[in-house]
Length: 473
Image (tube, rainbow, N blue to C red; front, side):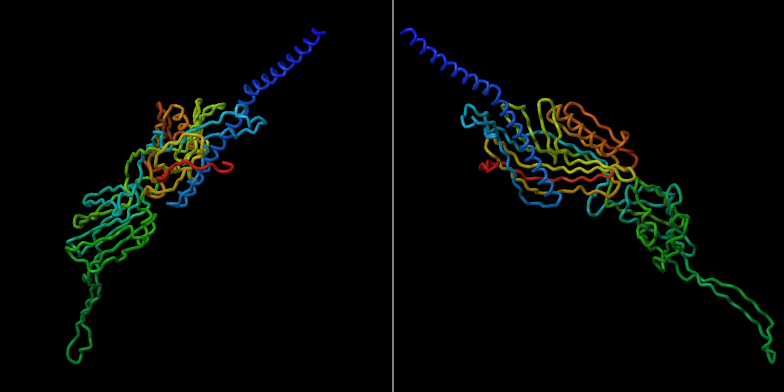
């Protein structure tokens, strides 16, 4: 009987140990597989939330600068960690049975990446413009790089009794032409001389003589123009009673003369020839441009707002906002989530259109941890590059110097995808990468201005600071 009692006690102990072992095995399995699965799910959800916050930041900043709202501040909250609360398993109230909470680093302007824009464009040089002058002796060839503000012909002549002038026309073709003349004005009269008899026969005519006579009256400054071989005006008087040594000026860009729309460069430089009618006339020209062909190359630090997560169960990811785009950086490469503010398109006639908005962040700072962080941003300045409208560029080159070959490959993809999406023939651009630098050069024909470029720089003041946790953060 004693032996039977001892056996029953032993079986209860063994049963308890087996139950305990089952619990330990279940907990171990949960810790090994359940918690990582829940942690992975929570970190994926968290990183999606981070991406959404970056997209929100991008939309808010685009709204500010596109509406020219300088000085208006916006705030965007970023949760640095999952706080371990992204999972809601039945054991999450027990710390050891909940996924480990993660942390992250939010850094402002800690990526040393640069953009360089080189262009050969019509740029406004100053408010007074650029003058180009010359003397018209033998035929003179003038190249209009862009439509001038005015085109003066200045003439004088010591011989005012005959017509003398300066002739202006395209070097090739006869689309239009103009004469600026000193034109004499004569008074024409008809005279008669009659010889009568004397005495009672005085009424009898014995002789009759008639002749015509012209008498110089004055000399006027006149303009005559033709458009497509059709006369627009003939000897239109600009100034009367010209004298010598007086100098007289005509602005052929005056719309009244009917050729101002032909004087300029629409698709490229236009060449005209100015010549004088003879050796008596003396002339020179003066033309003034608001815009001047200028080659520039400028580099800027693109700046960035960067969220670098320290994930425990999911792959390491870094989201960052840069140049108006949202990007994702991982070990296996960089991905464009929202394209940057560089867009390509074409006109109906196939002219490449390039728009570059350089959205640059100012300020600096780094915050690390798992608490919410507030990012405050405001547009401080918008600077538009003053360029001629229409076809204003011969070539534009955009290059980005990134932090890694992965980032450089991503930028090359951005350039190529944008060019292909715009329908650019491959003959109009070249692109490539060398190490950590990528570029695209758009140049249909270096001889003509065949690109429409608009370029502006948007400066955004940004600051990061810790924020109190918010409900639903």
